[in-house]
Length: 506
Image (cartoon, rainbow, N blue to C red; front, side):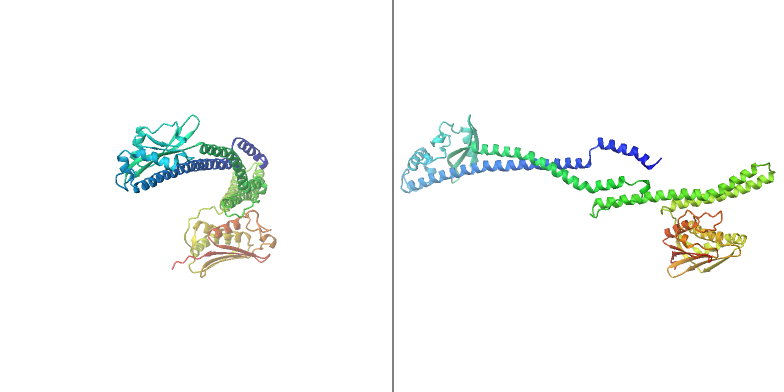
């Protein structure tokens, strides 16, 4: 199945997802508008409450100032009369003395006649403790006086009391202001004002708020959409770039915005994911190519041997010899497949190591006992040089495979009567492992590709060469924080050098 065919169901599901799911842009816009609507509603309520309360408070303050002015005028009139000795037998008596003697109504009447304040534009009236009207301006005609219950409540409070009186035509705001002298209530001044202007101002305020809120919400929708579009523009660009990436173009990457925020981290993370996917695809490709390349020869040999055996009847001994050959080929194929799988699993540094102190000199001596017979059989001279203990930290099995692969590679490519030199040396901070053969060497054109894990780098490679040893060796070296170099010249042999960090055992 091709990548384009595999992507078709995915795109179909993506289309269904887009039809049934709300886009992030719309969601962000709705959230923005919702939050803005809540803020606007709260602001509108608070603004209306503040302005409406301020209008009422301003009217109450005006009424209070008027009542205090009337009280001051009555007090000034009484002081003048008291100094002249009027109303009372002895001069300079407080007004409460006249109230106690029942002369309050006469004093108020005389004051009203003398000052003519009842003819002012703002209405007010003066009442005694029983709620009886002692004097009233023209604005209070026809209004009921205070009931005894209200008088009792107002007298107990000793503070101005505001009340709203509704009529058939309008609402009137009343202020009942107690005149107090030495803690004793003398009379009440009640003044009032129409709430028509306040109510009209409130209605106009509500109208303006009602007219301004919808445009504000419309602007919020537009701004929210623009903000969401601007915020999502880099994401949409990354989506378009990601949609263009297929199995044939896994090397492509999306542009990383230099914003230092979540978008940059998203792009970096996505590119890292693409790199891992590309590496996985590459490992699969390498494994497939290597498997087909490395298994083709032994399978061809097996097929040829079987076809040859079937051409004519054979003796039991000949069949046994054939089966032994087949068994050797199968063992060779098993080894090849094992190395291929190891390289495929570890090519992305995903192998799991069990680190421990490893002494390479001792390991080399053990491997020498195993490889010496093989070298003698191949008529190759093997020389091993060690220089004391060489400790490193790593996985013993992987390090064993590293040395075995290097030695195996040298034995395979060294012609009869050739020489292989293996040297392990511990230096100040590193341990070096050198494997030198006297084989045909590696052509310069192939030297750059010796670690690709697919083909054999030497033109005269034997038919049973796996061609993946050096790739596996380099990986083992790198996971041990080491370095591997290969130097070779045609006709002069090959030198493989591995440097590993030395473990201090002192």
